[in-house]
Length: 87
Image 1: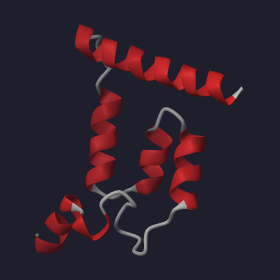
Image 2: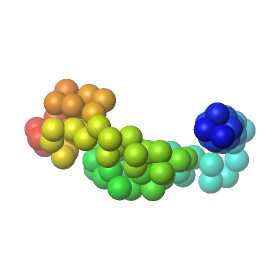
Image 3: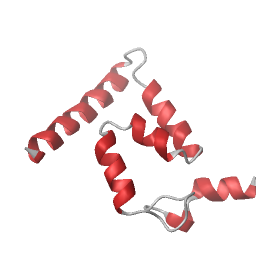
Image 4: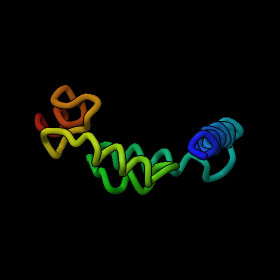
């Protein structure tokens, strides 16, 4: 069952990328909104905008960063965070 779910998500990602490549009106708005949420370090908005919000929330909660304003991927090396600190 999990393999099927992951396959559906992969197909949604591929379809979304194809819609953007084809220039389908409105296709890129989700990506723009996600980029803006990332820049604001708005984790809740990023989770809501993800193609699999339940999985995104699960990953964020299963491996929380040591500080609230960073992600688990880049931690204290976060370019966005450092941009905010120096601004």
